[in-house]
Amino acid sequence: MPESRLQLIKTISGNVSRPFVRFPKGDSEGHIEIQRPEGIAMPLVSIIIPTVGAARNDFLPNLLTQIARQTFRNFETIIVIGDSRQGRAINCGAAVAVGKYLMTFDDDTRLGSDDLIEKMVRIVTDHPEIGMAGVANLVPDDAGWFVRRVMKELPRRTSPIVSEITESDLAEHPCCMIPRELFYKIGGENEMIPRGLDPYLRQEIRRTGFTVVVLPGLFIHHLPPRTFKKFIRQFYRNGRMAAYVNKFYPQFVVELPTQHGEKVREKRPVPIRTISYCWRLLKSILTLKVFYLLSLVLYLAGYLVGFLFLRENDV
Image (cartoon, rainbow, N blue to C red):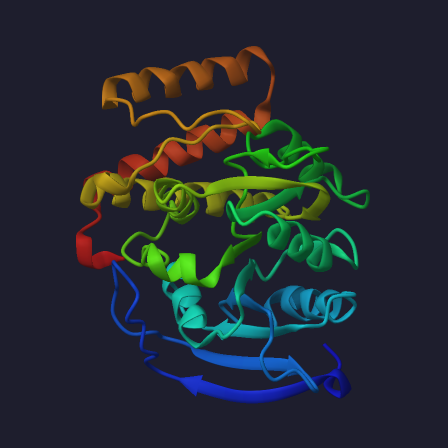
């Protein structure tokens, strides 16, 4: 974001008080930068961006440039740098946020239009029953063959644009908006788990009686790993972290629908989930979805290693 459009408010290092957090996990390992366009004292929206590094492969600078082009200007940008736990990073950002609405972006999110935030704010303001609002995730026109193939083969890697406000489990952290007071009420993100934050957050919001929706006509691009090596590393790690949660915090495991409008089912017994996983493996072979099959195998390998060898203090 150009310096002429920004005012750097403050940088907070070390521990940030998070009294609203239901499941805390130690002190923050990173630091926080808060930026506001000049002349904005009390912003309506607080944008929170967790990132492991201030310039991770140019992702963050590119996202900030896109935010700077947004037609909506009544916001602050809170960048949480260097915390390895996404949930804790977002909670630290929320602890210093002042906006009525919290909005999260992953550092590699690409915004679909320059009026995306403006339209999200307008719809959420007009519909107070909305507790969490997300948008569609589309394959970009400039995506390479590898990224395009992975996004089309793997469930939840893409989601179509909707024509009306639609209840959906595909509202996710790469682009979502939540009323700040509601976020505080549910205890924020679950800092104990390194994976499964989205399902947990959506579940807690629904328990309050609010809806989780995808908004019409809006989209982002949130891509999978761009190289085969990173693809292997990510899905193996996903399996290990899933094993960690299942092993030490099974009460936080939530089932995942794959389409808009599909209801979140109750958590199934392990034998049923195992049979379902085997069926997905077979189905990926029968439909020749090579990358989906590989993702399942890598995930399973990571899961087995994690379940056998990870200890609670390892993560």
